[in-house]
Amino acid sequence: MCIFCKIVSGEIPNQTILENEDFLAFNDINPTRKIHVLIIPKKHYESFQETPADIMSSMSKFIQEVANKVGVDKSGYRLITNIGKDGGQEVSHLHFHLIGGEAVGKLVRDKVE
Ligand code: AMP
Image 1 (cartoon, rainbow, N blue to C red):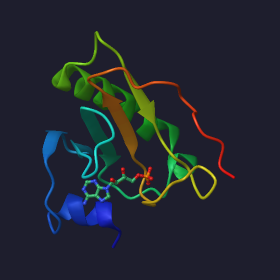
Image 2: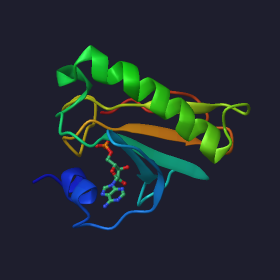
Image 3: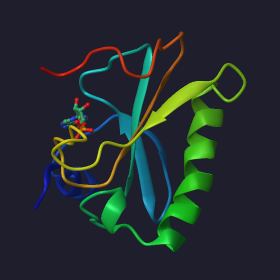
């Protein structure tokens, strides 16, 4: 079972921000900005690339609700999903990073050598 499936099952604790039948939003354990929330489907999909469009449709609505809940809907935020090796994905369970609460800076800063 992957680490995020263990979070869904309750085996690994999390700081929940918002939850419904299909999705869970919780604080990233290693936040990069004042607000850093991870948003996942409870069902396991490896990444965005394997995720059906209808799941993404309902996940979009859930992500907007998370942005409202943490109060960044007006100030703005960045939404990131890393996909696979070159995308820098470390946990192979679809997740979006919602980061904000302060200016997040340029999208791509460093070129990997
Ligand atoms: P990625 O590189 O896109 O796969 O991001 C994985 C993210 O999961 C990283 O930002 C980690 O800090 C975060 N993470 C890993 N384990 C946990 C955990 N147990 N609780 C919360 N966040 C976690």
